[in-house]
Length: 242
Image (cartoon, rainbow, N blue to C red):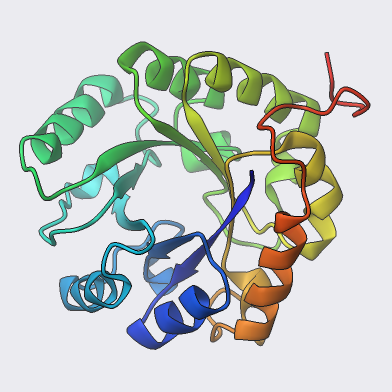
């Protein structure tokens, strides 16, 4: 079943998204970038609000920033790989993951593949997917680095995303799709059936990621996803099927 992941920047937004049916609450500060890190105080308030009833993920910015979580109760932690194309990003990312996994109160790492990897100066998605599969990470996120109105599918064709999804599923890696996705992308997401559809701007009142979460939009999108097939596989009648 595809669940709705909603990125929030305050405990009020988290409360609204939770009540409206978000399956995963993601904490970030959009003013700080694609995976902008929020203040620890905000993360703490949101974790306390959710109280284990839904998983909570937390964005840590880009890997070279060397930021680490310090709040108990986070289910997933993610770093972007912008600026890492010519770095030893595999060893750096694995070291970051091992650091958080030594602490029992912190969650699992998420491998982040930027669809617009060339302009992000990040590793290409196929290398990030191979890393996640090889290291047996639980989740891979496909996102866009630059938020300029273009979507994930402007940079990665749905057929390419479908291939990555099949590879991840075969290895037991769950997948979240992000990158300025919204109501207009529901047909493609229905064909792909990721584990999560990750949004922010699509459920903000202004339609911009720096706006304020609109519970009605969250409710409508969560309801749409709930109507999708439950099996996490490409539908046999889909044009994306092999």
